[in-house]
Length: 114
Image (cartoon, rainbow, N blue to C red):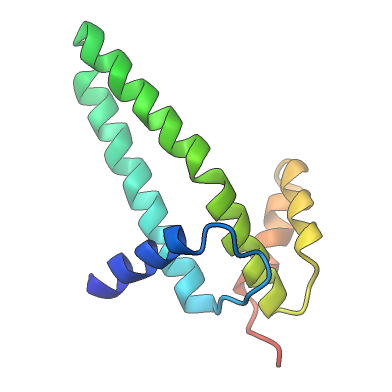
């Protein structure tokens, strides 16, 4: 759990580093931590959805989190592609529904190249 928290903290500290490298395990643990945060936010949204003003505030904060985390997610994806000796511009494959996503996941699960 401590490793997961440390990796998630590093995820936010390196939010603008598109040129470094990220190996397979730290990448996927960071993605897992981000997914856990999204699940928690979804549960909190569901709980407070029936409270008029508080529900709107929670929805706005959740949307803000998703918007703010977009650049760090792109950065860690680019660093993972760098680690597999691919161009970070391949992140544009994400714009192709399903097929592009599958291709990126295949690239991200591959081992690092020296």
